Image (cartoon, rainbow, N blue to C red; front, side, top):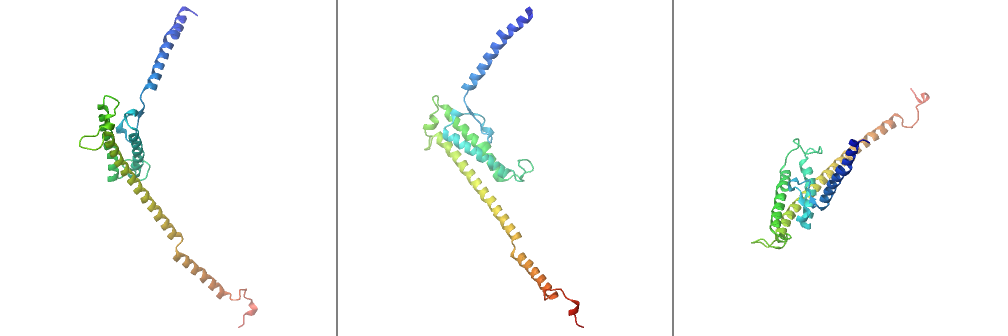
Length: 217
């Protein structure tokens, strides 16, 4: 091993490897100590929210709205049932209302609450304990009422969609029953069968072959 090779090996061992170890250690510690962020895929306008900045009840309500809203977007947005929402679908009033709730009203309500939360220099309890002036609710309770109203509306829409699709199933079943179990068609087929039996009886009343000897002129 010549001098140049030895210097290169020492550079790797005592320069690159320790630096890489320090960098990876820093990234690992930063990842562990970083606050957990909440993401709601059906409501991207909410962005990433630190988990500790929202009460448990608010996080639960947002999870429910996120799941229900995602289902409702497909139900009311995919009008041609091709599995995607695009320009080929017909935009209806209900779909626009769902979009506005998830893209505008929910993010605004959460942002307002977080501003109230950040006003407290302590642990953020101001928005959870102090009632808003000229009202009987705290900031937390006001946000929960907004989310509860949206949640109830989404429940009503899902319930209406369930019964609507259920009626379609019932109508399909009634059609099939009329199509394959129509009494009129069955009686008509029975009449045709009876006529065939009568013709056969007239042609051969004795139920045997006619012999030439039986024919009298």
